[in-house]
Length: 101
Image (tube, rainbow, N blue to C red; front, side, top):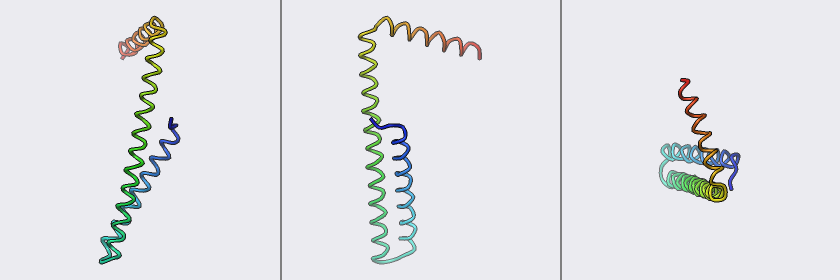
Protein backbone atom coordinates (compact mmCIF):
# COMPACT_ATOMS: atom_id res chain seq x y z
CA UNK A 1 0.00 0.00 0.00
CA UNK A 2 1.43 3.39 -0.98
CA UNK A 3 1.71 5.88 1.85
CA UNK A 4 0.65 9.52 1.67
CA UNK A 5 4.27 10.69 1.43
CA UNK A 6 4.81 8.30 -1.46
CA UNK A 7 1.83 9.83 -3.28
CA UNK A 8 3.26 13.32 -2.69
CA UNK A 9 6.67 12.23 -3.97
CA UNK A 10 5.13 10.68 -7.07
CA UNK A 11 3.03 13.80 -7.67
CA UNK A 12 6.20 15.89 -7.43
CA UNK A 13 7.96 13.54 -9.83
CA UNK A 14 5.12 13.82 -12.33
CA UNK A 15 5.13 17.62 -12.13
CA UNK A 16 8.88 17.65 -12.64
CA UNK A 17 8.66 15.33 -15.64
CA UNK A 18 5.93 17.43 -17.26
CA UNK A 19 7.87 20.65 -16.65
CA UNK A 20 11.04 19.12 -18.12
CA UNK A 21 9.03 17.96 -21.15
CA UNK A 22 7.57 21.45 -21.58
CA UNK A 23 11.06 22.95 -21.42
CA UNK A 24 12.26 20.51 -24.08
CA UNK A 25 9.29 21.34 -26.32
CA UNK A 26 10.02 25.07 -25.98
CA UNK A 27 13.67 24.45 -26.82
CA UNK A 28 12.65 22.24 -29.75
CA UNK A 29 10.46 25.05 -31.07
CA UNK A 30 13.51 27.33 -31.11
CA UNK A 31 15.63 24.76 -33.00
CA UNK A 32 15.30 23.05 -36.35
CA UNK A 33 16.29 19.80 -37.98
CA UNK A 34 17.72 16.86 -36.06
CA UNK A 35 18.19 18.83 -32.83
CA UNK A 36 14.51 19.78 -32.72
CA UNK A 37 13.48 16.20 -33.49
CA UNK A 38 15.69 14.81 -30.69
CA UNK A 39 14.31 17.35 -28.22
CA UNK A 40 10.71 16.52 -29.18
CA UNK A 41 11.41 12.79 -28.84
CA UNK A 42 12.95 13.30 -25.39
CA UNK A 43 9.96 15.46 -24.38
CA UNK A 44 7.56 12.73 -25.51
CA UNK A 45 9.52 10.13 -23.53
CA UNK A 46 9.23 12.29 -20.41
CA UNK A 47 5.48 12.68 -20.93
CA UNK A 48 5.12 8.92 -21.41
CA UNK A 49 7.01 8.38 -18.15
CA UNK A 50 4.75 10.89 -16.37
CA UNK A 51 1.64 9.09 -17.67
CA UNK A 52 3.04 5.74 -16.51
CA UNK A 53 3.68 7.13 -13.03
CA UNK A 54 0.17 8.59 -12.90
CA UNK A 55 -1.27 5.21 -13.89
CA UNK A 56 0.79 3.54 -11.15
CA UNK A 57 -0.65 5.96 -8.59
CA UNK A 58 -4.16 5.34 -9.89
CA UNK A 59 -3.66 1.58 -9.66
CA UNK A 60 -2.30 1.87 -6.11
CA UNK A 61 -5.22 4.09 -5.09
CA UNK A 62 -7.71 1.58 -6.51
CA UNK A 63 -6.01 -1.27 -4.68
CA UNK A 64 -6.03 0.71 -1.44
CA UNK A 65 -9.72 1.48 -1.91
CA UNK A 66 -10.46 -2.20 -2.50
CA UNK A 67 -8.53 -3.14 0.64
CA UNK A 68 -10.42 -0.57 2.71
CA UNK A 69 -13.76 -1.76 1.31
CA UNK A 70 -12.88 -5.39 2.07
CA UNK A 71 -11.80 -4.51 5.61
CA UNK A 72 -14.99 -2.53 6.17
CA UNK A 73 -17.10 -5.36 4.79
CA UNK A 74 -15.35 -7.86 7.06
CA UNK A 75 -15.95 -5.63 10.08
CA UNK A 76 -19.63 -5.16 9.25
CA UNK A 77 -20.05 -8.91 8.69
CA UNK A 78 -18.45 -9.71 12.05
CA UNK A 79 -20.01 -6.81 13.99
CA UNK A 80 -23.34 -5.88 12.38
CA UNK A 81 -24.78 -4.18 15.45
CA UNK A 82 -21.55 -2.31 16.09
CA UNK A 83 -21.70 -1.01 12.53
CA UNK A 84 -25.31 0.11 13.06
CA UNK A 85 -24.36 1.93 16.28
CA UNK A 86 -21.39 3.65 14.63
CA UNK A 87 -23.51 4.66 11.62
CA UNK A 88 -26.35 5.96 13.81
CA UNK A 89 -23.92 7.92 15.98
CA UNK A 90 -22.27 9.48 12.94
CA UNK A 91 -25.67 10.35 11.49
CA UNK A 92 -26.76 11.92 14.78
CA UNK A 93 -23.58 13.99 15.07
CA UNK A 94 -23.81 15.10 11.45
CA UNK A 95 -27.46 16.03 11.94
CA UNK A 96 -26.59 18.09 15.02
CA UNK A 97 -23.82 19.90 13.17
CA UNK A 98 -26.03 20.67 10.19
CA UNK A 99 -28.96 21.84 12.34
CA UNK A 100 -26.74 24.37 14.16
CA UNK A 101 -25.78 26.11 10.92
